[in-house]
Amino acid sequence: MFRKEDIQLGIAPIGWTNDDMPELGGDIPFEQCISEMALAGFTGTEIGNKYPRNIDELKQALQLRGLQIASAWFSAYLTTKPYEETEAAFIQHRDFLHAMGAEVIVVSEQGKSIQGEMDTPLFEKKPKFSDQEWQTLAQGLNRLGELAQQKGLNLVYHHHMGTGVQTADEIDQLMNLTDENLVYLLFDTGHLYFSGDDPLYILKKYLDRIKHVHLKDVRADIAKQVRNGQQSFLQAVKQGVFTVPGDGAYDFLPAFEILAKSSYKGWLLVEAEQDPIKANPLQYALIARNYIRDKAGI
Ligand SMILES: O=C1C[C@@H](O)[C@H](O)[C@@H](O)C1=O
Ligand SMILES: [Co+2]
Image (cartoon, rainbow, N blue to C red; front, side, top):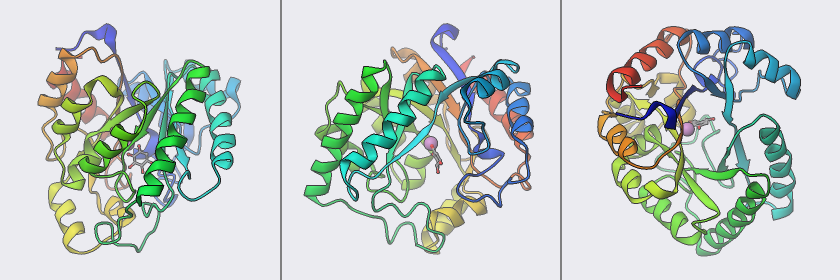
């Protein structure tokens, strides 16, 4: 279905160790994490907090296992802090990713976000941006997008549960307000499904602006409990709302077909944060790898 030369397959470290909740997988060493990624058949990864920040050390550890850095998450605070603060941090992050050979920078606006708050109900307390905040966010992202391109990278915006850019309407708003040649989109199946939106609506509408993909599946019964029980994002993750493709409720086949027919070239990155005690990371990485081989033909 996909042409092998167009696609690189990666997996995020968040199934081994969760940066937001170190109690999930805090004891799993970095080397075990990246060795198991390679063993499961992946050739790339994003960055977790256990990864060495020394460029040569990180490159060597990855090269030994045939892995590359696909990208790394960047938290922007454009709506709540002076632009210059976000810009200074972004430049450092960009230069690190450039040195690591990545081609995209994952950006998420964390101003007003509740995704890291353990007791804040996800659906009831979801932030909403004012008109002024939307303008500030869009202008700031355009400027960051330009900075990314100065080093040959593209900014891909990560819509995310518990943030001001979560729903399909909010993604529409962001895409309308930002420059299509500076701000691109990261398509994350799990966040759209959990939000109650149709991932295919976003995929089809913004196919030309999607430059990075996170493959995340959802356990629908847990998603429903979280919504009805007024639980937080972190509580949802702890309970196992997310899992790898092939283990949850989302059928990836239509999305794979659309991407394969499009001009998409880049990463498909499995990302399934869950408790590694309940879901053995190597076992789940293999479930994902086999599912992708079966459904996407790569
Ligand atoms: O891309 C992501 C990065 C994680 O830190 C985040 O919480 C997760 O849900 C995600 O999609
Ligand atoms: Co993601």
